[in-house]
Length: 175
Image (cartoon, rainbow, N blue to C red):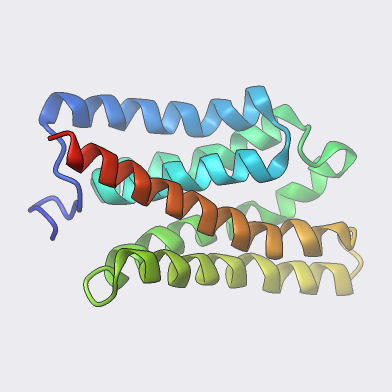
């Protein structure tokens, strides 16, 4: 199922270089330029994460893991006046994205692609929701973050994963 670079989708070298550039650039600039609605941007970013997990090396996936939240932070719009609160979540967002990619790549060795998307999305949700609950209880952030770092993250991760799987199917069928 995977090639020697730990990729599910074997992409020809020139195309792989394009993916390696385009996915990080898009993952930063879509949140930075478009910003809203958050569910749409979230689905797009998560699709980029899953496509990078499927098609890029681990090293090239790292930028896609980190850049989206920096795009949101730079724009300052998705969370509006709460953007400063986003800084509390950056390590958890990066950890959630990283774990989602890693769990997905491990899970596909044992489960279907769809089941692997669901499992990895649940892991990301847990990594983001648990600190949100703690931060709200400590009155560090607004209770709005329970929704933003909770069910919204779960649904956008699943939606992005499903879109990535459709993308892979389309790409494979055109070979």
